[in-house]
Image 1 (spheres, rainbow, N blue to C red):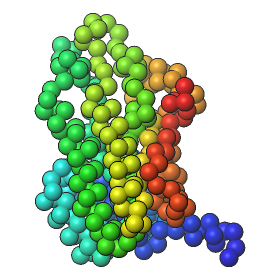
Image 2: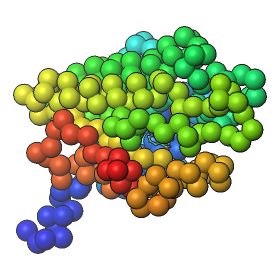
Image 3: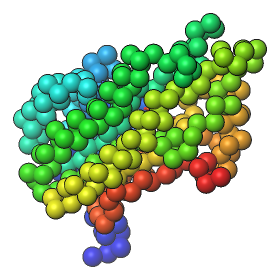
Length: 280
Ligand SMILES: NC(=O)c1ccc[n+]([C@@H]2O[C@H](COP(=O)([O-])OP(=O)(O)OC[C@H]3O[C@@H](n4cnc5c(N)ncnc54)[C@H](O)[C@@H]3O)[C@@H](O)[C@H]2O)c1
């Protein structure tokens, strides 16, 4: 085999079926795009309001493999069972799951006089909702789609954590001029809790299904540039040795690596991709 054929073989996903939760969102779509570009049929699972069908049509048109957009709520067991049935009816298999969906509340939108993001005020309903999507959703998807992988005796799960799974948020970067300390926005507690717990879920699952050749890893991405306010961006850049946030397609290499046979001896790992932020 030539070197280029070997490289092609390591990263080739032709015939595999990959599910991306939150697949119609900013990063989920890009994760789906690299898997489709490598030959996988990609299923974008997302809330109906995010229009995963339209995004999946875009993938099919751009990359070739038949892709599917399925409206589903990952906090609902019945919604996920329906999604699994629809995927199996169309493709007959499930090879890859990327647990990517999460609530990402924008604390910069916090209104003056309503500092809901602060720990002292953090609503129980928001705590429950964030855990339900980011953690319970990942557990349910792993359980429901993972069992199909068990039947196939092979599979890959990637959990999307965050640099805030390995370091604490630096609340100074969220501060706004002119606000009293008890009115300042902060990164919500649920973000750190959900992302850290996903590393635990990754470790647990990675040894649970090894006999069935199911590999489970996590990625911990740093922040992605997405028109954040200049003041915030400047403060964050100071904390990152590479001096910038990520571009939205800069996690595609890691996603393809972890989902393909290029990482065939890797399981239980958390791949940190953060411009060096957590090294400091
Ligand atoms: N954007 C960043 O800077 C960044 C950095 C590190 C980690 N991450 C993580 O990457 C992942 C994707 O982030 P993003 O920036 O693309 O966020 P996003 O908000 O654009 O996408 C999240 C998607 O999840 C979907 N979703 C929410 N609740 C759902 C539910 N109950 N069922 C199904 N889908 C649901 C949303 O509709 C949305 O499309 C998240 O886990 C996020 O925490 C993002």
